[in-house]
Length: 283
Image 1: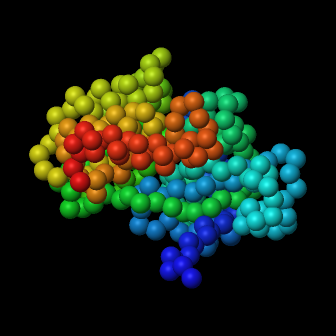
Image 2: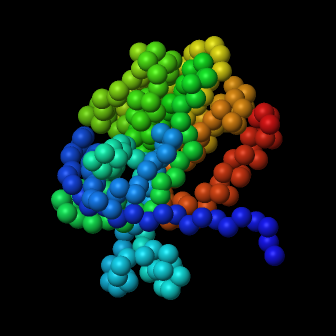
């Protein structure tokens, strides 16, 4: 008999669209509610995320909807498609769950869904997950990412005590994509506009050119996998930042949808770690 603990299955939740708002030309905010959300809780993390479930067109699912039964009884190609999104805000009193979606026209799955969502639309999701929150013992914080990391960066800043020192770098398409951030008094926010350039180029240049404050940092770096890899190397090898002081991972990878990226993400991360250990990253 194996002594390995049984992995707890993710919790399924049901939510209804309450309202939507176009925050920027390419960002749609969707607020969800419904009595079924009263069993939801985000826990202590500022990067809490959920996995939204999108039915495959033409597939008849059991009633009531049960993703565990679906994955047990139906072939994989009929399983609902999952898309992972950070919780932008959660108010258990209402209850209301807020998620921001990047929307680039008809491409993708979740973005077009959010853009066409109407009050009363139903969605199921799994979660939450999460692993990061600002450490009050850190001397200063580095937060860096693209649009996909902006909800988690926003939530982290709002959770910091007044006067907490932070360097914040956010790369977006252009000035029209900037958003108002609730920042502690010690935060310095730098918005970077990529224009026609590749995702992450401006962000990597800005972070590697920045003068870091003295003291122990805690870093949160997320977004497109290629620039995350570059910044991981910079922090781990050049600045010798211990692994436990970093929350750093690719939320997505250009040229891949989430299904393809998740299938290869673990091996990608193992390869990155091997490369950086060979380059002299600290244990």
